[in-house]
Image (cartoon, rainbow, N blue to C red; front, top):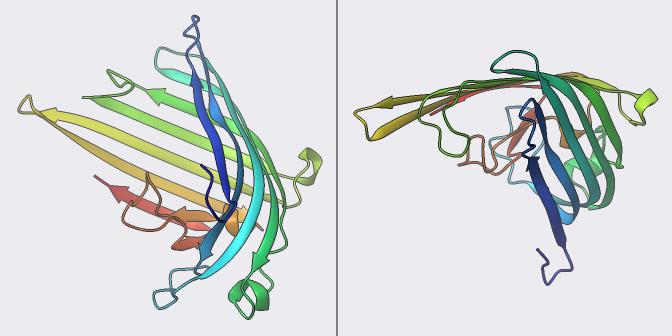
Length: 212
């Protein structure tokens, strides 16, 4: 996507389906030159109308897993985001406060990921469960300007009833330990989690949600 304000959104989420079904490869390649809203950090930002900041960043996300049991895959995750903050609003929160990441920087994280998947179909599941558990460490020794860890658990459960209906339940928990940049805190909203909210309308170190 390209806008008349010379903004660019170029991203390729991918999942490779290999002939050897014992392996999983998925992630994202991207380059973003865009502007976003920032509302502050924490749950007490109800009256904040938000401020605009600009950012340019390239992104590499890679997950490589191997099957260890029938429905269980275990492997490695590598995430790289290289941020350049192009502008912040004069007199805003980012301008007036010492917030991690306000001057940009590189986020480079390496860790473990496990998938437990009993769904009956990938694109239109009618029953089963998908559990993803992640332990990710961002540190100087792998090129990160910030030192923090992420622990993420994402559970989706699918239940069929009356032959026509499927109930999908989701439990998501994300915990940040250390000093993460503001754009790598747990973000509420977006196109997958709590979709009625702008992504990042609320952000903090710890995040727990349920949705159906």
